[in-house]
Amino acid sequence: MTHPRTSPATPGADTAADPLTDHAADTLTDHATGTGPRPAAGPSEPAPGTTSPGTAPPGTAPLAAATPAELCDHVTAGLDDPVRGWLRRALDEAAAHPGTHGPISVWELRIAEAGRRCGPEQADAARVLILHAARADAEALSRVYYQGTGAERRAVLYALPHLVPGPEGLPLVEDALRTNDTRLLTAAVGPYAARHLDAHQWRHAVLKCLFTGVPVDAVADLDHRAEGDTELARMLTDYAAERTAAGRTVPADLHRVLTLTDPPGHPLRARRRPRLSATDGKESRCASSTPTST
Image (cartoon, rainbow, N blue to C red; front, side):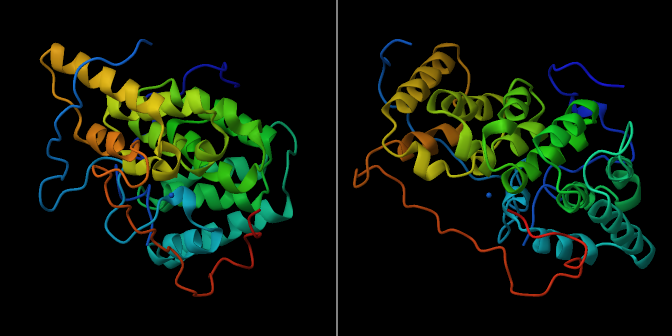
């Protein structure tokens, strides 16, 4: 049954077989003039031994930025032999029968099975691999997104950067950004959004992350797009002033983004974080089933 083109399912819409943890499966190894002074910086680090929801553990790269080979190594390393065999067969089926066949394609059924088969820590990556193997285009991705659970919609958003070179997938990102599902928002602000959202939409996506508590580490290309963005700085200052006036805490991530909006060389500008490489040069165990991404 096709879902109407409305806001995606809430976090509770996923089945019990796919209770994706906030960090394990989403990562690998990506108005008027502002008033009031620049808000003072606050604490930004999570408690020792904890990870903020939607963030990547140290030394890892976002799932959306990983190549199919990296995803495959990540998934297969955590599966036992029977499930590994199921995934290989699913990828072979998708590669052999891409596109749409009848009311629903066999690879779409495998996407629906992934949570039950692969478990919560590998389900997202397994779904993305199946989408890659099926060479799903914008039309197929839209069908999976609007008919799918929250977990399946996340997988579509993670797959967009490699499968849709143009802006045809933007309606899916825009739909996800209208929700308050933090896991869906985390997937929506990846590399595809960084490439295709216009300045107005992108600024509001950053504000949405701050409003819902999605760590700005999830926002792909944040340093580059925020650099020297005076309009974003004004919006952040306004938002901080509104929260302060209401007696509410200003999100710590807001101060980080506000500093990034300073022009290069500004004395308050934070040091850029080094880019992390997710590739280790190892041959993928699923390379024979998964086509090279575009």
